[in-house]
Amino acid sequence: LCGFLLHTSVSAREHQVALGRLRERYARGESLLALAVQAADAAHELNTPLSVMKTLAREKHDAAESEEDREDFQLMIALLEQCRDTLKRLASTSAETTFQRVTLDSMVQALSKRLNLVLPQVDLRLSVPADVASRSVRLDPAIEHLLLGLMRNAAQASRTGEIPRIDVSFEARPQTLKIVVRDYGPGLGREERDLIGRIGFSSKSEGMGLGLALGHFAVERIGGSLVLRSNPAGPGTIA
Image (cartoon, rainbow, N blue to C red; front, side, top):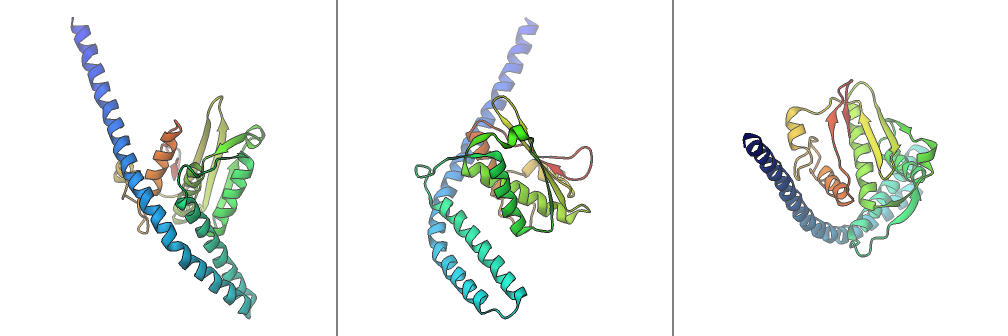
């Protein structure tokens, strides 16, 4: 009888924990849905100013007298184009979103190029086995955005440490793909571990607290998981 009562008590607690996680996931989904609607509106509003800024940057680039100034304006144009591409994805509804099939190698190279555009001083080290690199995947734009965000966060964290470097590795499994992003920054504090991933919380002064919350939602939607922890074997954080 005691064993039965103990088993029942444990099952009830596990049920409550699972129910709490479902409620938290549902609440996060509702918040992100409302955020998505606002983001689509903002994308339309920002499209025109970005177009004007890009035109002005091209004019300044063509009129620049020094090679250094031309390079600066060319970088500005590239960043504005990246912003416009992001806004186009935001403005698209889920029904309009197309999922392209690409090789992991081409995806990784594209993400590396985008990261290098913003943070060229960080050493990006990739570990992509040949059998993984050639694998074709159905690319979800949300997952691509998440991976770029993790790489960018890692690069920014590493810049504050002694080793300006990030490691990104890929491991193929029968039905899944494991991606690990490691930085060499200060790691996660206790408060950050408890709050990271919640909408509105960011460990960066200029952050908005949206990237990881969106990332959790995107990964859970396809049956995956996103885990962040301090590296037990040295400096930095592992995602």
